[in-house]
Length: 105
Image (cartoon, rainbow, N blue to C red; front, side):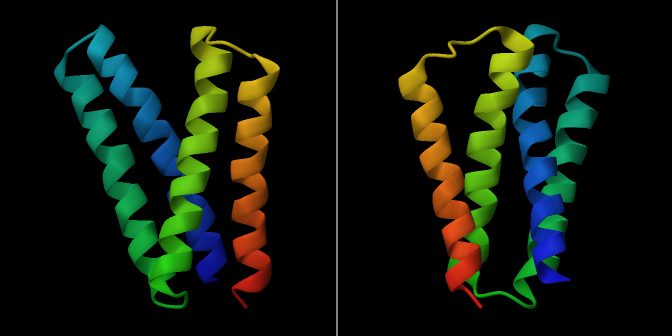
């Protein structure tokens, strides 16, 4: 169950990062509340995941999901660069995240 919590935490982290950009474009209470909710839920599920996973593994995977997911979402939503070098680096982050899952058990 800890890995499921960690994936959920990573998804909320991705949305929190996207909502930072949304808030920067349109500073209002709704966007601030959404951003805070995204990050709050991310930390909640990270905490739940850490009940069954080592802190270093959980934090590294959570950060990897947030970083790679945020970069992918920014390419999709904000037309950021899809240069092959950037995609390779995102792939490496995702590979390392999967590697931590495989060796963490």
